[in-house]
Image 1 (cartoon, rainbow, N blue to C red):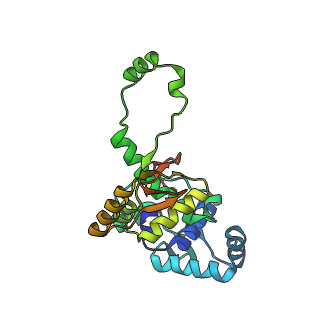
Image 2 (tube, rainbow, N blue to C red; image 1 turned 90 degrees about the vertical axis):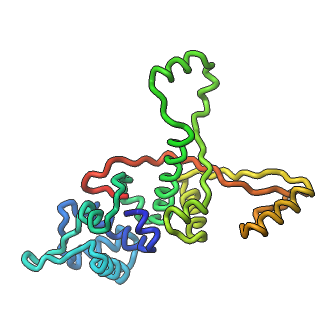
Image 3 (tube, rainbow, N blue to C red; image 1 turned 180 degrees about the horizontal axis):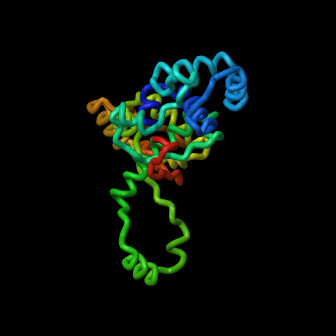
Length: 241
């Protein structure tokens, strides 16, 4: 669900929907004056914005009105998943603190998916007995830095999650600024002949010029390295991805 929300620019409605899920565990809400005031205070939004987001959630089919009992029913994640033919069942455990910075959190969720796919491909898990034999043969200093970085291009995010390049770049920065992911820049120093070749290569391929000038030298900016400790779990009833 997070992927669809980000691609369809419905982050505000999603944040409000998650607020309802966290606040009304029964899945039912009257949506009276006190409900609106509570939502406004919790989400740091004025009441007009809260009402608008509620109405948009109704339009999206995330909230339905029960005419028999006169309350609104908050639709389950499973029902939404089935209606939209979403296959992923992994979940990120949202809490209230995530709702204020929803775009940064969703950005971290998206980059974490590619991060985990990268690790699975290039750092596959090995059997425990193999790891024990290796650990016995290596010095303690070998295990000090256990971070595994993944090279993740915003072009990959654009392609796999149907985002614009600008949005992919923006949500990466938001996630990094909030400390949800770590971004490490990579540069390759160029000599004058290589600068010309790099410019021509980018021109012929239609790619963006990634050459920067720093301290009297030219560098080719490579794909950023990403590290994150975000985790997913198997979706049950209240979590979604």
